[in-house]
Image (cartoon, rainbow, N blue to C red; front, side, top):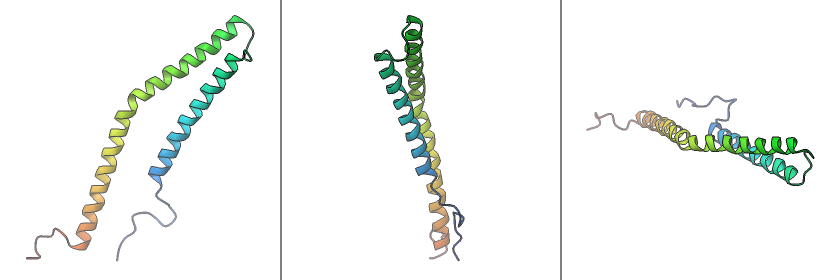
Length: 107
């Protein structure tokens, strides 16, 4: 009898949910930057110099935040890849033992 890895009421979409969440976050930030820059270029956010400075600082802060996060993405992806690799190895070893492969007593 084979035991189920994922419970019946779960779908096991951890990877797809993570990818979709990160993609949605990136798209949201890009849309915010485009909207702010478009409103700033059209002078719709403010007429005074102070308000124009605020919007340019806001755009600069978003850009610096994206730069800070993008410098950490390779490390995060490496950690995720190692975790998935170990998970795949554990599943392969478990399935190999259940099929009787690698026992050493079959000779």
